Length: 256
Image (tube, rainbow, N blue to C red; front, side):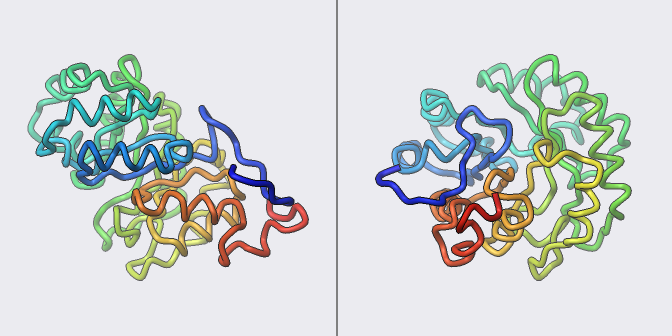
């Protein structure tokens, strides 16, 4: 940090198992990725190239090298995985991971209907090749999954070999964990936490109010994802109690 302030919550340091910030890159240029890393690379733990944007991104190799040289893992959005699966191209998807020397992959079924045992099989296969993140929750706002089912799905995917499970929210934060208004389904979240360890869950929380909710519930070192590049530093100040939303929360050692 640039100077000393007392009573700041202790943040985990990279490489960390919790306190993750996952950034969604929706098509940054190589120079924009370089600028983001220069400004806040120390706050970024992993980058997702949103949905299937990697398919149409120019100079993809060069951008991946920028992240790789900064020590920031990258994975391709789960929608791309689903696009391969629905076309019976799982082996081709695995070749893409190898082609771009990717260390992580996302397995999801938010846009397609997939037998859950089949999804777990994909996780078991891919974990031998890469570190797997699996996503639970539908991108269809009309599909409401009961809490017990979220827990069951998450646990089975962890048992299959997922490193972390992702709570679905989309880039807008208006499905899955959240109502269409962006309001957190707090009962769902708290029910999940009765069975699934917090360090194993990466909560997609693109909206500031959602980030504040999770930080107040679970502390500065909660895993948060789908963070926009220009929101990385604002999020870090929320984690540290240096923005109005959490200003009082961490004073005198509270909330840590």
